[in-house]
Length: 278
Length: 278
Image (cartoon, rainbow over all chains, first blue to last red; front, side, top):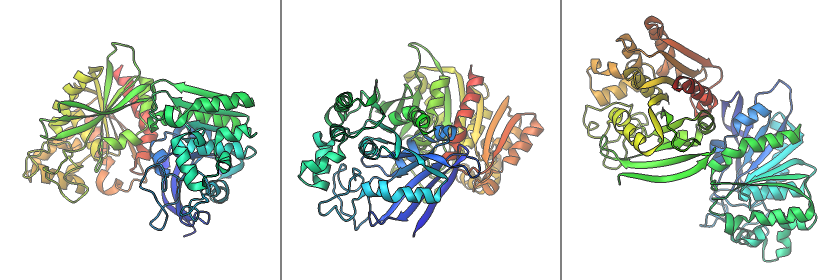
């Protein structure tokens, strides 16, 4: 298995595919989905990365994300990786918020996670050349978005690689994992007790430490069950205000943490990305 | 349990809910989903029924159907029932195309199916008053659509109750179950060997026997793996031509039988329904 097509289907005039490859970063097979919109022969299209949240695989947003119509209209390739390595030989934890399905987009440094839980390297180093090689992608025009834990991933990766990602947005992101239970558990478990090592995996800390992006778009439902304890978008707002980052933070009345929320605002986000990927 | 709300979530400004009730038609609990779009207080909105295909529950289209944006824009309530009774006390068959998940929208007359498999009565008699009672529905403005086995259901119900349903459409429907393996197995199993009893559950036979609707819209992917053996849309085209029914049958190049296909053309269908539900 080098690069395997698990399925493809015509959708909104383009192709929704699901693919698998043997990852050197994680040492496991990894599955991801890619939507390629209708396009002229030979065209190279901008790429939007979507990072998913806790418990998700590539399949959740692929099924429920309502992104294909907008991507078809806007001419965007949409890439959805998995959220962790998986398999019987891969360390796991019975909790939904740690271990398989909860990679937190870091390279783990602690046992038993270090050998496989290398989602930072996987998403930022290994998968991009694979996308470039197998799809009509213009890798000079990339952007990134995500939901919840994946919003954390999108923010931290976007802030770390601003020359690569022209736009960064998130739905209900974990903005300051160092200061909330989900994040303290994950960063402590994967990275160890030294909180200095956590800062480059915490969007608010990254901004405090000087990381910058031109603009951020964040949607957050005000009926989100995780808003108060885990998400704390005001911490991002305060950091962006202090740093002069143009943050658009929209509190969306009545919306929860689900894919119904994501789907509702997906087209908005994609249009915002497309504007910056022109 | 009379009428129970399993979940609700804000979506595209409206509410996507999942509900359960004890059905007298099937003698089992039945689950269904309803999307109510944003609307003015006191407004009554037209209702589109969506009948699902083999193996599906309400959840498949609710997750993957991409109908909410269009329903929100057009002001349509979208109702998605299950495809059969379910439960340990309900007869079943190991095949995917018979028994639970494969009710074929008939009232079974044969043992062991007759006690519970009464999806015709459930969809046409029991569920409508429940929708009228619990949602802001204008029951004078209803239409019906479905996919595959559910396209069969939409066509047969729409042809049988033309005074109720102002519009009927289908994605890759089984148009002539009496003449294809899925249908012969199901109608034989549920209704018995007398093929005369099958005719009112066969869209082509119904049209041959005089049933009429003003217009039909059918989309069919030409890469659908079931096209030749199970779907045979040309039989519907021939029957409509002979009967003077205005059928729009669109062969969609490259599309398969999946929800990617349904989602791609869902907004088209809903706009077509909305036009007729004004």
